[in-house]
Image (cartoon, rainbow, N blue to C red; front, side, top):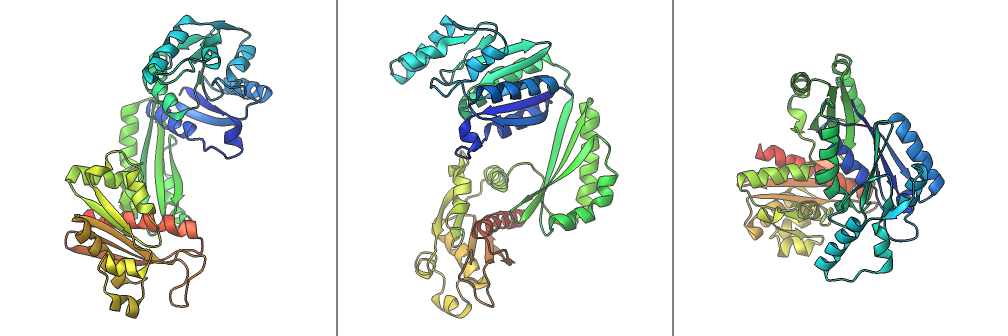
Length: 413
């Protein structure tokens, strides 16, 4: 296996001002291409720390991919630091300047002095043009190892990884082996209870396959990961272990995919031509936001109602006021009427409705904080279920969303 390390640079990452999404995206793409990501390192905008991180990475990895710190401002020091590390100096590159000028012409903007400085690159590197931005990509080689420095802006990094870096790495290392993942969304288990059930299964796994437990707000995502030089043999082994795992878990697998539940439903809706809507109370629009973050959701997502008040439930979703008075807003009757009301309001094939007590207060002895009723509808079929979650508001909202999507996936079959 070709060992790879990712280094992300920026003070903003260390203080939590910006979340590092780059390394997660890169690791996924590298895995799919057969490159084994062994380490991820994050350092601030400090020359000594960057040199230390790069030195360690090149000792243990064949490929080091660096993002961040190559912009035009004073705190962007990665380019100069790499010059020091590779014992080289900056030189002006006319091809980089031409690329920057093309980008600025497209935006109808004028170059300034700081932007022109981006055309200075380390003399001993291979320059790769950044078609999405002004900071060029620099490719270094030493002792058979490769270091690539890329922008920290996610869409710029993703473009250059997809169209320049990965193709070059695959050409350089044509027989890197195979890394395969198979994931399962599992319901009705705690992590410890599931681990006890699967103890013998884990002990019997081939040495090149591992099982990981990824608890995700109310559900557990299991992931089988295999690494092997023979991709066909690995595929057969992963399929065999997946069949064994499915038999052990019987009817408790919600979906067999590494995608999120909303992405999984997105595929179902689009492939089957179904329309969808939501009626939310305690989740406050979170469900709707999960789907509207997906490109192309307008093909199926008709809309949603955040019916936080009883008046909104009765006036917009046509919930019977007498049922709210008798059963309460957090009840099976109300959840089911919310789902059916949303279905009718938006003329949708499918609906999810959630009503509950997210907390941290508002509970009663018979309906404590964390009580949630979820109803899902598909055509004339309606299913509902009561859940008892925790006292943590944020967790209750996420668990409500995940369980609601899992229920709809099951109803759709």
